[in-house]
Length: 120
Image (cartoon, rainbow, N blue to C red):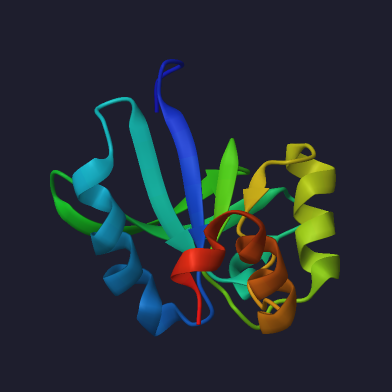
C-alpha cells in the first residue's frame, strides 16, 4: 500500500459474507482505494491489525491490515461497545452505519415534517 491509497474496511457478520458484500463495493472504488471486508472476530486489538479479504490483480486474498481510515458497518447485530472501541482506535465519526435498527414511529415523525404528502 502506498501513501496515497485510502484504506477502507467493510465489517460483516460472518466470514461467508465477506466476498459477496465486498463485490458490491468494488465497482465504485478508485485506484487510490484499498477496500477489504472483515468480521468483528478478525480484529486483533492488541496488535491493532485486522485480518480481512480483499481483491487484487491476482484474485481474492486474505491479508492483515492496519486499522483503516473508515469502516462501513454491514454487521447488523453489533453492539455499540464494538463501534465505540473501533472509534477509540480510528477516531470519532470514522465508523459509518452504526445505527442500523430504526424505530419506525421515530422515522415516520422525522419524515412527516417534509414528506407528509408522500407518507401513508
